[in-house]
Image (cartoon, rainbow, N blue to C red; front, side):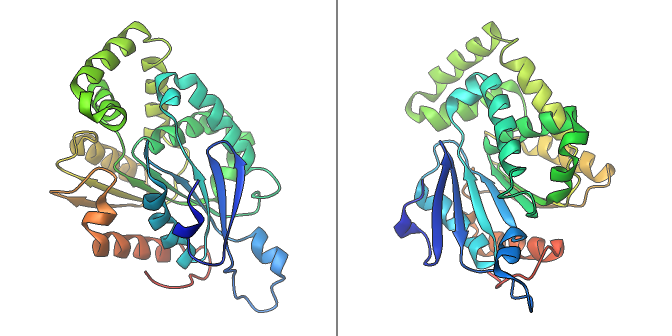
Length: 281
C-alpha cells in the first residue's frame, strides 16, 4: 500500500483485498447540476498494474498524474508466485474482472496503465474476456484507453531475464538458468499458460486507443517484438501511439524522461475525451 505521506492531500485510501487498493481523490466532474453521488459513480477510474517489486514512492508518482486529471486509481500489485504458477494469475484475473463489474465500479469509464509484468496480469484478464465476450462485453466497452510501459515481451528467455533481474538481481544469471529449467519441466503449467495469455494480448478484445512506452536498451522488453505488436494492432484498426527512446530504464522512463513522458500521457488522455480533465501535467 502506498504511504499516505506519498500521496497528495484530498486522497482517501481503501484496501479492497490483498494487493488491491483504491485511491479516491476529491476531484469530481464540475458538470452543472450533477449530483455528487452520480458524479462519483461515473468518475473515470485508472486501473494501475505496477511492475514486480515496485516501491510505494515510485507508484505514487504515477498515481499523482491521474489524480491531477480527475481519476481515482485502483492499484493492483502482482506477486512473483503468479508468474511462476500462472493458473493463480488467471484466477486472480477473473476476480479483478468481477470487482470491476461490482456496483462500486460498474458505471465508471476505465483506463489501464500496466508496467512490465503488470501487462501479464492484464493479459490474464483478457483471456477471460476473450472466452466469454457476452459476459464481459459491457466491461470491455468501458475501457476507453490503455497505456503500456516496458512490457515484458519477447522470448521465454526474455521473461526469465526479467524475473531474475527483478527478484534476485545479484544472482540474475543463476536465477535465469533455474527459471528456464523450471519452465521446461513445468511447461504445461507455465509456458502453455504464457502462450494463451500472449495470444489473448495480441488479439485483444479491447480495441481502445493505446499508448506504448519502451526503449532500445531494455533487456527485459524486446523492442522489435513490441514494434511488431504495435504494427499488428494498427492493422487491426487500433489507434496506437508509441514513444520509444534509444536509451532509458525498464519501468523508469518517467524518471529518465519526465517531460516527454508527462506530455505523452497528457496528450493521450486529452484525446480519449472521457470527461473534463482537471489540469495538464
